[in-house]
Length: 133
Image 1 (tube, rainbow, N blue to C red):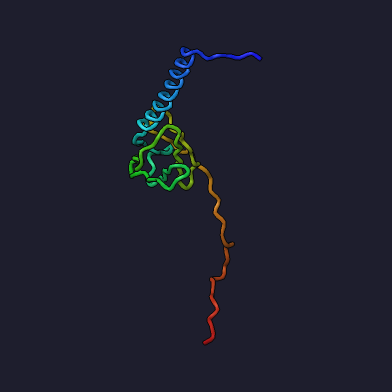
Image 2 (cartoon, rainbow, N blue to C red):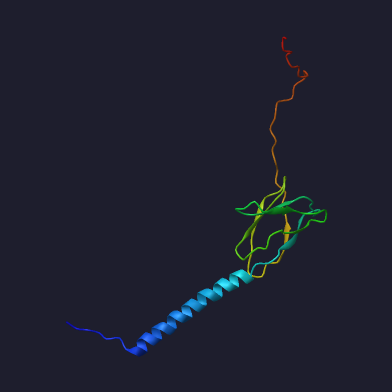
């Protein structure tokens, strides 16, 4: 049977390697925390800025709306990889994934045709039945 011995130098090398790996994990954690930032932006359509457009963080209840100039500031600090959902009735909903350097978003929404359904047109006015008391 053949035996293998581990030298002190190999153990030290392995220890240094593990130490650097742990430092790398710690550095990534610190970078993730420091990349949180305030995100602002402007939402418009082909004919100008849109007021009261909904901007929400995908998968959460956090959100805001645009002002009369189409501008917004998201109320919560956001991180790289977060997705903002931008929606407004009559326009296509857009999702924006934040990159490392995203702190300002400028979005132009495209119109979308919306079909409303309801009761058919009737020539007779509606009359409710009176209850007998």
